Image (tube, rainbow, N blue to C red; front, side, top):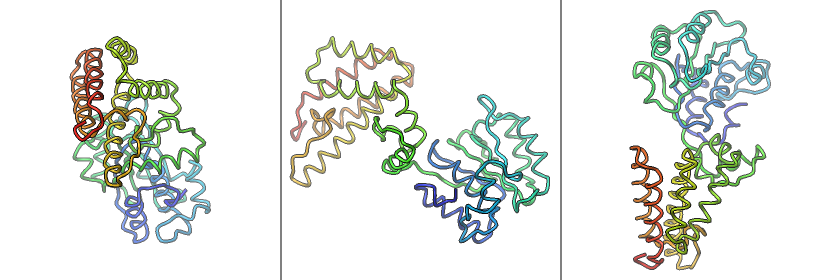
Length: 327
């Protein structure tokens, strides 16, 4: 495994390597950031580095008995707690507490990884807090979370935070290609999350919606109200996919604005994406405002069918402005 196998996350890897190299290990770390950006891999790499028999500059060797056992998930001093159902329960934390005070069986440092720590129940969080306040020696806790706002401040204050940022689209593309996953959905829709990119590209309904929406937007100037209302009804039947449609619109118009700015600077005549070619710079700005309003309406439980119909009508009108300076 090792930190060098993790794509991106330069700052996070530097923090963890330095901690091992200079032996400045905190008793608890909070790895926070979106799902699918490398937190879990970093936790295993850190556990390896802490217990490696031949570490070098804070990097685990990856080939010693300890590193191989951790990579294989069978090291007696490295354990992982994952949610049972929709939450991390107090019984799981109490069971962990008993083991945390045992001496290391064969490693240097006992490592306890708590996945999705933001799913701790209140009772479980209070139980965990007690052990973080009086941590056992030679034990490191790694809490992995997506949203720190769902974690009590008392727990956050007792951990060293390590931020994991969304990955660049190129990094996500590299990982998906390594996994042999065909990229059929714009990677920007994943917002830097490898797992979300995998989910989107492997979900046939997501791929179909993106393709349909691209075709719909490319021809929006030619659609009458019947076509607009019909497509709104079609999307409304897949209510859980509406955020994906809005995200796609958002990406198309932002990319179109960028393309127009680049074209103006270069004095060229590059075309934008097929879905956004009909829109000028100002039209894209207004379209993004309308998309933002639609997000707001839906968040506040507005009628989704009416919200989509209204958005499609606005987009059609904006597409008719043309692509000139005022379009």
